[in-house]
Image (cartoon, rainbow, N blue to C red; front, side, top):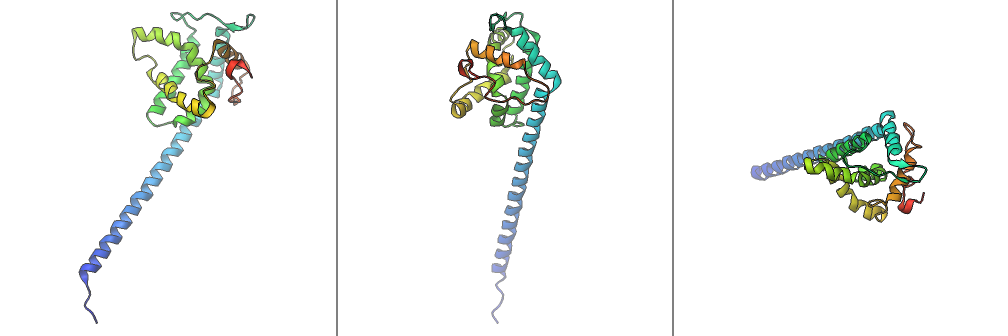
Length: 199
């Protein structure tokens, strides 16, 4: 019998141990990744539920009333120094989405998929208010602005930029569609507003 080469046995044992350790790290990494992805989906569901809930639905309808002249079928003039309070409610929701996305709690593409049809027209309509407030407080709605800027390339790639720079008529048509939203009723994304207000 040949003598046992204990150094070779030891090397093999170390290799097996190292491979097992690497495998455990990979498995743990996969589990952590899956947990984070599930958490993002849960966070998104919570934001969608809030957005489609009764309180926010009423805010959306109220802002639509404040911003539209239905007789003339156009937007009302917006005074940046005295905007509807509901506009701030919607911008604050955008700010929350931006912060959660920036921190990694929400997936950017998912946020675009769920909220871009609403966010682009509201943000464009609110831009004079944001610009006015920035003069007094440069940090005003920084996360909301960051989110919109990050969503623009996705909109350009996925939907040929159909919504990222809506016209006044597009924004009016969007708000006109907000009159029909009901709590818990999902919006037909992509049907709510399109270029030139075509439904």
